[in-house]
Image (cartoon, rainbow, N blue to C red; front, side, top):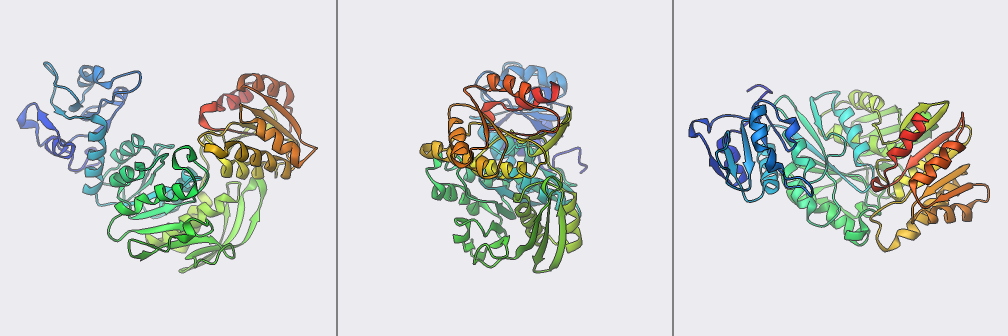
Length: 465
């Protein structure tokens, strides 16, 4: 079967996988769909349309329209009057989509690499994909389509020509990882770290560890876990489903035996990082062309995954050196004689401190433009204060801070250094106007906050000013 069709997703199998009832022309039951989407605007000839009930719009209202666009079949939570094509009646289209994704994944002859962790999932996904692309046809999560809606849509994008899928999995509460890993069934499961994220729901880092490691229960029989040995919580996970965990980390950062470790790490500032990699299959030097020491960890994870999937040392080195960043993730933008570090997709204490460290290597005036971080639980003020301290400790020239909790950035920065030029604002809009009048040629400006702060608008203003 060509890549035009989704293997085994006939109308009959869709109904069976979704535990629904097929209603329509029985002679079409062996028809195979060509795609599956939840956005009616993306429907093409031969597609399955999955209408989702959102907060504002119910996808069911578009069912007639998608048949006109060429949809082959749809799901529905209620019986349709005089439908223009066949459909599968289900109790919940969202649950049916997850069941269908799990069925489809298991029908494919493909290796799946799952990635989770508190920080660095997306950048690690990009690094691992870059390495695996040196040997395989790779399908990967687009952007951060890593939740219970995004993951099944990513799985539906896999085709028979793909040999490996690299799937990012993000959670905020207990039970979510069970549902995500039931769909993905990883052959290799990477956990980057256990940090201070989603503490509002998970309580503390032990809760984060418990929630993240739910994935172990749904891995393939011969699967392996690839873990960051330098994370104190992950270092306690000795065996996964009866098999020893595969660890990576710095040479002397922990006592855990590492299958991949690095020495001679050299920070080149905006030119990236250099490091010597030691693996069980050999050693090599690599230049990572992305700034920040955390990318050395991403590269070690990628090397460990590459070795598990049969890549040579030369292929691993090439993939590490070809890796690039993506928009919103430490993305460098040259504009009006300034450098804007667009790292504003999301934020947490660890990634904030990493980005501030990257900023500190810039020449000329350094400006940290920071907004509130969300979902940090009862320690949120303390964690914001510590980020402010990092601004002072890294000798950042100027701090622009916006948001209720961002007051703690200002306090922390002032506590650590009297040299930081601090500007605090209650809202992003006022801060942006002041920032535009403050910046000048030669400045390097880091823009970072949690997604709800809408800091991409700050980047846009700086670029268009």
